[in-house]
Structure formats: structure tokens, C-alpha cells
Amino acid sequence: MSEVTLENIVSLCKRRGIIYPNSEIYGGIGGFYDYGPVGVEMKNNLKRYWWKNIVDKRENVVGIDGTIITHPKVWEASGHIENFGDEVVECKKCHQRFRPEDISGVCPKCGGKEFTEPRSYNLLFETEVGVIEDAKVKAYLRGEACQTIYLDFKNVVDSTRQQIPLGIAQIGKAFRNEVTPGKLTFRSREFEQWDLQFFVHPKEMEKWFEYWKEERMKFYKELYRKPENLRFRQHPKDKLVFYAKDAYDVEYLAPWGWAENEGIHWRSDYDLTQHSKYSGKDLSYVDPTSGEKYIPWIVETSGGVDRTLLMILFDGYEEEKMENGETRTVLKIHKDIAAYRAAVFPLVSNKPEIVNKAREIFDTLADDIKVIWDSRGNIGKRYRYQDEIGTPYCITVDYETLENGTVTVRDRDSMKQVRVKTEDLEEYIS
Ligand code: GAP
Figure (tube, helix red, strand yellow):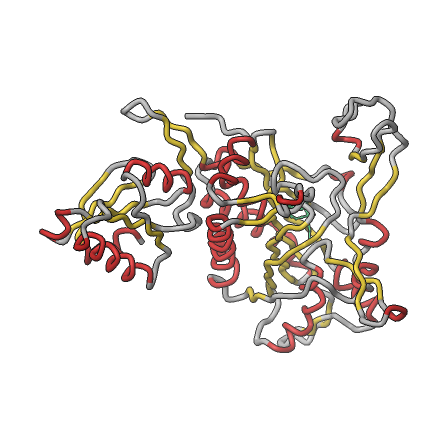
């Protein structure tokens, strides 16, 4: 068993096509990352896993997909223009900027010891909308994805048969011009969030806040392999925003310490009240049964997709000594998140009957399950590769397959092999 390091994961991600630094041939650009062929499958699986849990399985949650650029007034109403900052200090020697909590009197870049006084710095990315130079309007890339949910709240209520309590879910990009991006995708400048905004009657706020707090921890405990590495961190009362009565972070024990994975926030009626005020449109809700009119309160659960994927990699990574004395690197990640459910190998690549049978199996499985093909090199190397990307099963078609219609299925975690009839294969691996 090994203690995973950030370097282990950075190296694995690059080596196996999970995550690459963006614009690498130009020297990279701080805080921007691309997902490679394996990473994109994992990330899509992870988003589907969340969507299934939050939207598909619940009668009172619906989804939306909003835009990245919105009317600029949204960010005045939300408070982001005035108040979405970090404090920065500048090293007087190399002029690099840092958050005060990231330095302890010494510049991490040049070793300088003199800094400017802390200044506040807004994290919103600005852009311009419009084609005529003089008439361009300043706009912002959304600093948090959830604002679009508030903007669509009335549309959702008016266009569906939903009633409060009602959840609106969204997975989408957010942008923050972070002062110190770092730790791979943990703090990046372009990232994805999964948000559930759950709209409730004010009298039921306490109940739903507790409900979602428990639900979200349960979600992460089922997703990660080591639930003991999860905990809640309650925000200190004196650090809460004025409208919040309570807030918790779900934290995971990353190689550098406890790290925020998701926030569960008590937003009261703040968001809909602000948008009512700034837009001039009444966003209150009328209960269809009682006729009561009120501004719904909101329980927010807001997590990072990229962060969760990164923590899944920390959680699943092992370097294990095998019986033959060699070490294997294996990603013991949740089977539903793995890029491929199974790999299909012909034992040898120069026997057409075996290759054709393997192709037939691959094609049949590929109709329903994500599978990967590999006929290159020896079986040992193929296993090592699949272990490193976390493929739960490796299916080998060999001479015996031609005789009795069974294949070898090797399990990623135990490395045990069993023979399975080809007609039972799909059920076995799914
Ligand atoms: N709407 C509430 C909100 O945005 P947040 O705590 O600022 O709350 C929610 O962000 C989640 O988004 C965090 O728990 C984290 O997982 C993710 N996140 C925030 N900033 C991030 C960054 N710079 N890079 C990657 N993920 C980030």
C-alpha cells in the first residue's frame, strides 16, 4: 500500500491521457487544463453519475443547461462585482502576486521577503459582447454556475408541473481568475461545477438543509473507496455571510491535507430577492393549493466536477507489489467512473480465428458498454496499462474460446481470473 502524492497523479494523468496542461506546446497557461482520451470518459461518467443521483432518481428535481455569459447586471445583483475577491500581496522583488495565506513571509518564486500591503482583487473574468466597437457591452464569464439557475427559476416553475419543494440542477463551467491556481485541477481558472439549488418554503429550510447535508455525504461515501478520508467542516459562525445560518464543506483528505470538495449552503431568500430587486420582476412563488405567496428559500449544494475527479484519482491510486516481485500501479476507482468497463484482448494477434472472435465480442459489448480494444504487445503489458487507467475487467479471447465458447475475465482489484461463457459476459461485467 502506498501514500499517494500529487506528483504520482500529475505523472499518471500525463502518461495515460487523463489530464494535460492546456497549450503545453506554447509553454502552458496557468490554471487551464484539458482532459485526454481517458480523462474525458471518466469526467463524462462522473457527471452522469451525479445527474442520475440528483436528477433522474428524484421526482422533485429537474435540470437546466444555462449560458456562461449572462446579462452583466446579474453579477451586480449577486454581489460578485463588489465582493468577489481575494486579497493579494505583491513581492517587491519579482512582482509576483500571492494570496497572503500562501506565503509565510518568503516569496515562493524568488525568496524575496518584502511584500506590498494586501489589496483586494476581483476574480471575475471580463469580456465584451457586441460587434460594433463603440457599442460593446462589458460582460463577465460566470464566476459561479448557480446564478443561471436563479435566472431560470420562474421559467422552470411556469413551464413544468413542479411545485415547491423543487430542485433545479445544473452542471456547467465557471471561471475565476484565481491568484494562485495550482495542485493540478484543484484550483484552476476554468472549471466545472455541479449545483443543486433546492427551493423550499422558509418554514422547511432547517429540515431540507439537514436532508441535503446527509444526502451529499452519502453520495461521496458511495463514490470514494476510502470513506474515512471524508469529513464535514462546519463554517465558523463569525465567517458566515449575513444571510446564512449555517454552512458545511464536504472535505476529502488530499495529499496536502483536508481539502474542500463541495459546499452545502444556507442561502435563505437572498438570491431571488436580489434578482427581483435588480430586474424589477417579482420572483415570488404562489402555492397552487394554499394560494400563499412567498420568496422561496434555497439550500445549495455546489461541488467541483474537476476537483471530485482529482480526488477520485487520489482515492483510487495504489502501487502494489505483485507475487512476481514487480510493482503495479492500479487505479481502484468506482466501476461506474472508470473510462472503460472492460478491455477486450485477442490472446495473439496473428491467429485470425482468435482476432475475429475477439472483434465479434468487442462489437457486441460496445452496443451497450464502453469497452476498449488492445491487441498490442504481450498480455502482461496490456494488463499493466488497463490497471493504470482503472479498467475493472480485462477479457481475453484465447484457444479455449474457440473450443468451448468461454473467455478469461480478469478482475482489476484482485487480479483473479475466471472463465465466463461469452453469452454471460455482458451480465457478468455490468
Ligand atoms: N455557488 C456556490 C459556489 O460557487 P464555491 O464554494 O465557491 O461555491 C463550489 O464553489 C465548488 O466549486 C467548490 O467546493 C469546489 O469544488 C469548486 N471550485 C471552486 N473554485 C474552484 C477552482 N478555482 N478550481 C476548481 N474547482 C473550484
